[in-house]
Length: 325
Image (cartoon, rainbow, N blue to C red; front, side, top):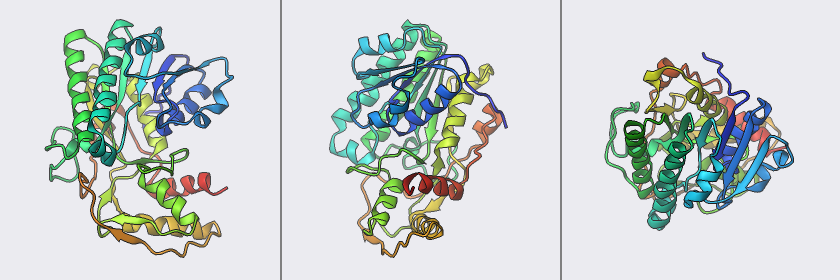
């Protein structure tokens, strides 16, 4: 495993007040980097970056990636951009495809242009496993994608195409990271579009029944946040010319269905002395949902030296340590 760490660089993290972005910032600040966080706080939270607000090497810019000037100013002098800003959630994109498109495509294009204009060395961006769409093969391999099943998936696929075109046309270095269901501390459990793990934990802790869409056999390659932080650093620092201007799966290479997820949460809560006697409610399947998701991580492992160190079980344990204190 490679243990490359970003040290002594100027790094812009877009969406830095969000779940993934703020976890990246925690590590980057501890590794003596100068960090700029750009976030409009639409889905991010100031509390996620609060410990750093008075740090001499940290700058918070409350701004929107849909504004080009903001992107240009935020990325000035940056060595690396870790682009996490996006409007996530398949259901939200179905309810408001125009807004999802504005943020995820127009905002992404602004960040690419800012990378080019400010001659930033490396642009690492959050891609998505939703790009695989209806392609039936498991595990998912980067070269084989199907038809997108939601407006959100369309936007994330367009990101990859734009990154590729910018690399060829303007010579910038991009790496896309197709995240598979990332979870961990600081993930928001509230709101209509909350991710499944924090949402289920929150409901079970309140003694309320979580609703599973479908029969619970939908499965996901749940990926703990530490693994995501690791590969962002590997992608930002790789000197292998064959490793850039492409995309990688970011996952653990094992999948868990939603029924198993609920059992794992209850089991860990019991170990912590918390009773979780709630039954699951089964609702209708959601539009745009992929039935099974499982990643091949061979490309990231071989090319970048990626080695996920935190398993699903250990990740659930650490996540519950954060939520139950």
